[in-house]
Length: 167
Image (cartoon, rainbow, N blue to C red):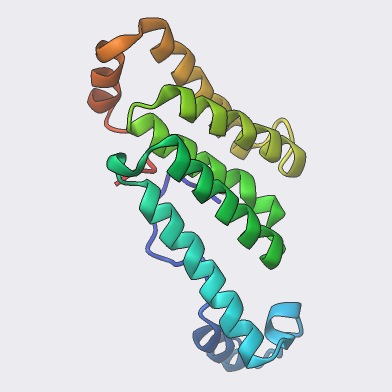
């Protein structure tokens, strides 16, 4: 997942559109998602829509509190387990850490960022771009925390969200 490029594609599969596109190619998909009942596919789509809703909720600086972020991470963790998306959990944590950075909560950004890095290294590898992206976020935090205080907060705003994942 390239989080540096913004996209309007939702995280869910858009079941009907996906099935129509695949069938127009003369292909019958037998993956677990497509093979599920319509009810299970709809449930999966709702869960994936919930992921997007959770992420949208933490993109607003006023929503960046330790309690809200921890609830968001717990909710994402539950959805990730239900959907079998463990390999994507690091990407989701990265987005939350980036939101915390943008809101100026460096301690929370570091906490979530360090967890994101553990997950990314486990699933994407140590030398993968997705892991490097989290390392860059942690490096930025090191730099900002070294400067400290309000000056560091202003610099984040001047950088215009260095990582490019916030609106």
